[in-house]
Image 1 (cartoon, helix red, strand yellow):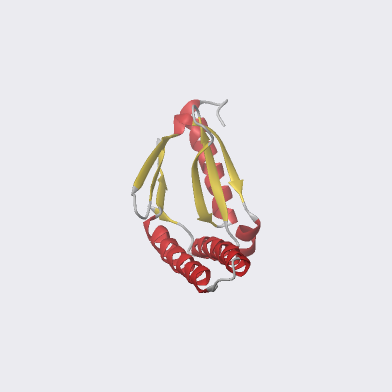
Image 2: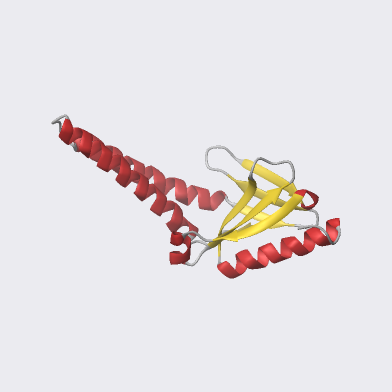
Length: 152
């Protein structure tokens, strides 16, 4: 089983801090408007940060994937464990993506789209750009070998 790059925790922690900042700002704004103490919204923002950091650490520990000759297998989840198997014959196309913050920390993700789905079925985050491109290329090769020349 493959693990994600440890820097993915920074991305997830950044999201938690950004959410906490929004919660805190809205809460303090409401506290000022209603002329009450801003302690409660600031405390709530602190709780969001702590829960977000703990969630990022646990999420990283529980995220694994492997690409085999017939399918991609993923295991992930904090409160609920999710195991996903994507047969290669169902893959329609594969993308490598990098958000602005992922570029900043040197990470990327691979997104796998499958037949009969309602959007992106599988996203594998926390990869280096080279690993994301390599995974995309490897999946394309495996799908072509599995399904014929007109695949992916």
